[in-house]
Image (cartoon, rainbow, N blue to C red; front, side):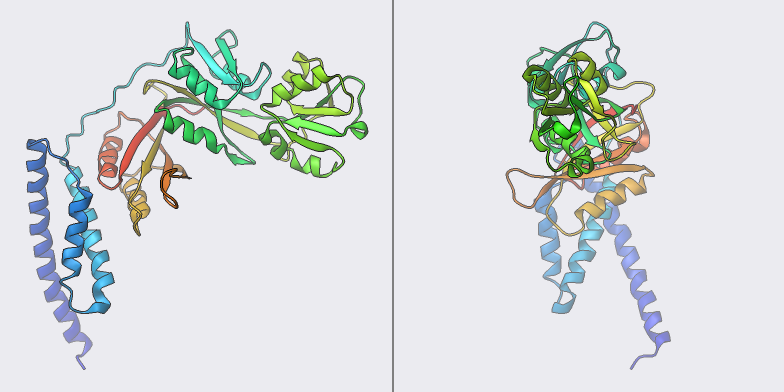
Length: 373
């Protein structure tokens, strides 16, 4: 048996050879990226990468070491790609436009009195011209068809989480997030004037309104729950039915607009209930107060790919605020990843990080650079 001193001396000698070879390999990697840039070639080729990994793993004689060898080669190639990304010109490739607030039309889902309309008025102004639509997707279609200049849809609630359909829509339509507006959401039980809670038999609201008020509804099991298109639309419906046994869960403004009475206020589970709304448009915009960047990307279905993305964000000293995954429709058990980070597309470390991320993702798209309000 070798003594520890001998083992350490041998490891030091091997490390000296490894580090010399590592330096040689990185110098050649620099030559490769220089050549590709000069000849306008595809920078990172996943098929070539897989070929290199398999070829080197097959050179290992000890079967027990092949898994470790694969990790070693993959890590070395990740380091090489990160190094190569530093030679890609870092000029800003993003066509950033100034935001618009005057002479615009903004679309939202629901009817007057909805929380989406409140977010619209808070972000823009109360006099902003607006159009309302039945479904979330209708708002995206309206922007696609130039009926509106911007759209407003909810993205996440503090108590019930993400509104996943809108994640998919912002990606599928290829639009950009240009702003974010959070508003406090107070859910009230609304009924016809003179009606009473003990006489109620049905309640209508958007699925989110029902979820956000689940504790109150569980305490009143005799009231049957019905999902409706929108909180304000449910208030409008109750007003039209003129039935004292039905109620809606909606806002105070909806009660005022549709002549309903608040039978019980603030029935939401969390008194600090809030919803994040995104404002989206056709162009990537920026302003002096931008602070957040949203990205969507896909990865190879391999061990460690998501870790590598997180490592790049960390290595470039960027604060990651949130990550969300959504399934790829065409491939089972694979996902889109949505990430929010702090920063501006005019910061050099952000531009460098995005070039680095492109080397480690299958697809990468900037969804927006905007201020969070």
